[in-house]
Amino acid sequence: MTIESGSLTMLEKVLLQRRRKEDRVVQNLDKQVKAYQAKSFENFINAGVRVNFRESETAGPLVGSNGKMLGFNEYLVDIWGEELYRVSVSLRQNGQVQIRHLDGWVKVSEYLCHLKVKVDPHYTNGTPEMRSDLQSQWWRANGKAFPLLQLPRELRDIIYHYSFGSKIEPYPTNKARLGAKAKPQRGTALMRVNKQVSSEIRSLLGRQSPFLIEHNRIMALLLSSPLRRNHIRRLELALSHKEFINLFGFTFPDVHYETRWQAKALRGMQLKHVMLRIAAPSLITGSVIFDGACQRVATGWILAAAWPVVKGHPVEIAGFVKRQQRVEFEAACLVVKKGFEQWNGLRVAVGHPEGSLGDYDEWVDWVEGEDDGGVRVVEEPSQEAQRFVPDCQVGELPPRCECGLPCTAREWTEE
Ligand SMILES: [Zn+2]
Image (cartoon, rainbow, N blue to C red; front, side, top):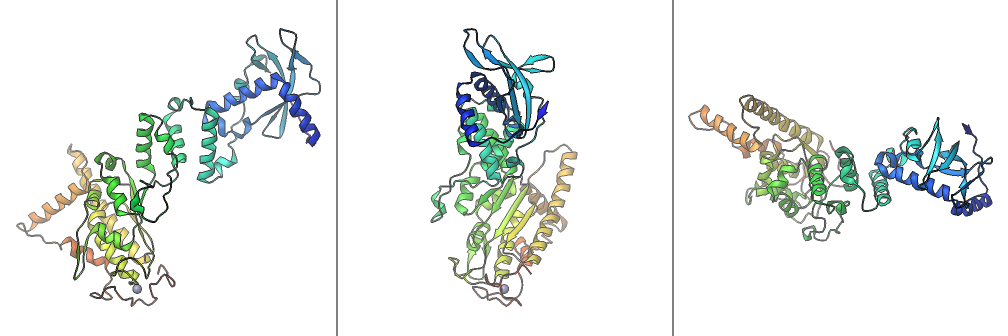
């Protein structure tokens, strides 16, 4: 039965609070509600279970075995903060309060099971931070003994995901970040729970969240373990122009940069997404090659340098890149990806395990070598990659901007 809930005056609220302190029945009911909330994260984010009990106007006293008054035998239950249900309560021998429901006496948890799940809007509409905050509230509500490992894996994964946020910044305090402020990585306390949790987190993070790499040295640290390389599925490389060239390797007329091992390691990884985020054009890049350079040419060099190690991966180019350059590069990567997948399909069909892009490169080299008595008929990879470099001007360092619309930070457009 529902009745309208009137709003309480300040005085009524104070009186109610004072009385509630002495009402052992309400205390027990509240305790059972808390236990119910703590049972699962779904219960916790069900806004409906933030229930309030207060004695009804027709309530009589509920007396314990020692004759002492403990509370009342009828309460109004305030659910969703708006509806009031009238419930009768009784006391079991063990001191637990029960609620009259249908034809019997049930525990509060059983009563609450009949509540519709109405998820807290803070959870559904909130930012990842708000969700993470709810997670930690739940965590605190459960104390240290919370049986995380008894939850289904999918729910644990949700917890991990919100605890760590949408991107992982590995080695947040590493001095490779130089002047950059050390950022504490969220959720690391969870990693210390036990081995199983930390391995589940590693595997989940590797599958779902991109590792954000802003320094070559961080990338080297991250990829140094083959085991970790096997777990990582998403990478976002947000490097300076100079660091991109240092990583991928490139040959300028007067200077040659060797491809780093961590760039080559990408050929052996099974990546679901690689983002190359191109930095803004700048007059102060820390490199004479790129100070005030034409952004279109600089990006072309970076893409040409990246091509041999990222082709065939699902690549997305972001940041300060001209639309045409981005579209062409992503499409070229997709063509290689399709060839690679076909090749892997054939391998699996004849009973071989799936190969890596590195294996595919070797096979392509071999096939192309066979075609013409061992002489390669296709262009050298470096030449093949040159197609991404605009041919406006070469030879001058830094490359002067001759674009119709200058490629400067101030006048930057994607077109
Ligand atoms: Zn330009």
